[in-house]
Image 1 (tube, rainbow, N blue to C red):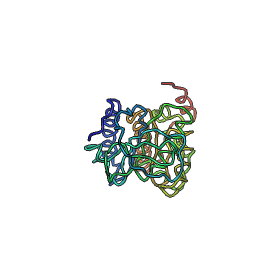
Image 2: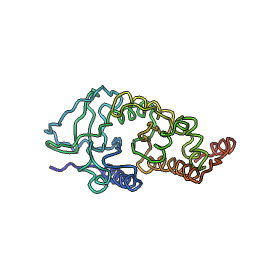
Image 3: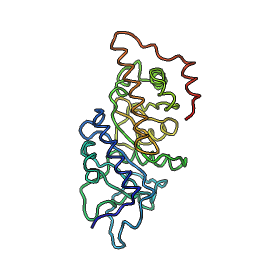
Image 4: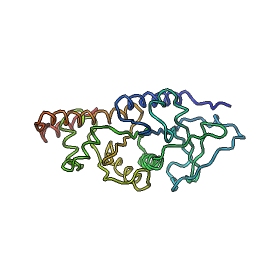
Length: 266
C-alpha cells in the first residue's frame, strides 16, 4: 500500500533531495555525514488508513512542544548523494506521539529498517525552540562545511567573537544576510541531549550554530534558504584562508563598515 502525500509535501521532499546533492558536491557530506529535517505541518492525515498500526519508537526524553507534529527526516547511516536519487529510500516521515515521548514511522507501511538520523534529538530540540518562539523556520540542516570547521581547529580563532569578525569582514553578504552571525558550541559528544540543548539555545540567538571541530546547524523557512546561509558563511571562511595562503593576513572590513552593512534590510 502506497502512502499518499500532498503536493506541498512532495515539493518539500524534492527540494531537500536537491539540497542533499549540493551538500555532496560541495564536499560537505562525506560518507553518511550530515542530516536534515523538515516540519511537515501540511501532511494530510488522510494518508493513513484507519486500521494502520504504527511502529512506535521511544525518544530519549519527552518533547512536548512538538507533540503530534510530523517531520521528514534523513535516515541514519545514509548518504546525501543517495538521498538525491532516492529520497524516500534514504529518509522517512515520522509523527511525534501526542505525549511527545516517542514517534511513529508514517512513511512506510509495515516493517522498515530505516531509522531517523542519530542527531534526531538535536533536531527535535531545535524544532521545539522554533515552535516556542512561533517563528517561520521549518527546516534544519546539519552539514560539514570544510572551511568553517577549519576555523575551529586553530586555537587563536576558535572564539565566537573572533570567528564572526572574520566572517563578516571577508564578504559583505555575510553581515547582510547573517546579521546575528554564528554561535560557537564548544566540543560536546555528538548525538547527546546535551549538545542538542546547547545547539537549540545557540540558534535562538544566531542564524547558524557551529560545532567545534565538527560542523554546523542552520535553520530556515525552506531548504534553499537554509543552505544559502551556510554557503555564504563558508564562502567568507574560504576567502579568509585563500588570503592567508599568500602569506599575508587579510585586511577585512572595518568595524564601521560592518556596522553600516548591518543596517541594510531585505
